[in-house]
Each structure stands twice: as C-alpha cells, then as structure tokens.
Amino acid sequence: MIDQQKRMDLRARAGGKCKVCGKLLPLDGPIGVRGEAAHRIAKAKWTLKRYGEEVIDDLRNLEWTCHDHNSAVLITFNPVERERLVDEIRGESRNSRPDRLGA
Ligand SMILES: [Zn+2]
Image 1: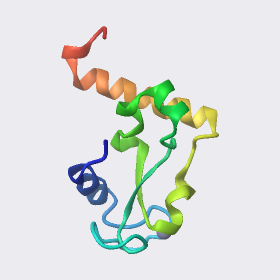
Image 2 (image 1 turned 180 degrees about the vertical axis):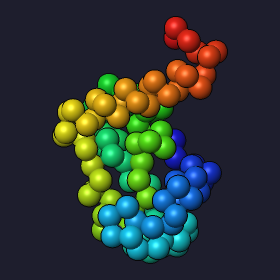
Image 3 (image 1 turned 120 degrees about the vertical axis):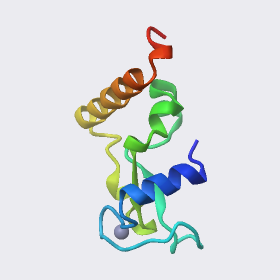
Image 4 (image 1 turned 120 degrees about the horizontal axis):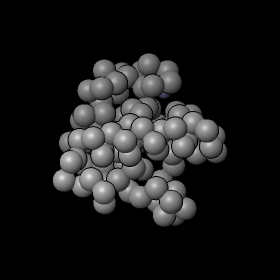
C-alpha cells in the first residue's frame, strides 16, 4: 500500500523532483500536476504474486516522477535488474526486522 506518508517520504528522498526530467512536483493536486509514486517493478497481478506487496510497494521500488514519466522508470522486463532490486529489498527488510527472521 502506498499511503500519504510513503508519498511524502518518496518526495523528500527525490527532493521533490521527477526522477527523469527534474521537474519540481507538488505532493497534491490534479493528475498531471502532482508527483506520482512510480513503480520500478510494475504493480501487476503476476508481480504481486511472485514478490508480494511488501516488495512491490517498498520505497526502493518507487521513484518520484511526473505523470508523463511514470512508466519511464520501469524495470519490470529487465530480469537482471529486477531480481537484483528484489534481493536488495528482501535483504534490507530481513536486517531491519529481526522478529521476522526465518519467516
Ligand atoms: Zn518528468
């Protein structure tokens, strides 16, 4: 799930700027004006099934973009980059959540 807090964190990480064109984007506003939380690995039925929502909606799988560049950050069909990112996210959540070790 991508809630308002995650959008704020993402925007802060990006300095408010679209990852692709650098345009400064507000948190809120109509579509086409506000910034978007763009998935790198797309949120699709098969990616959710394979990786889980925790990975798909992790901040590391998101970039802050304008509406036009939402799909420009996709790596869904780049298996090498995709699996590397998933490993990174899973490794990170294991390290930061000792209570879930071995889960
Ligand atoms: Zn842009």
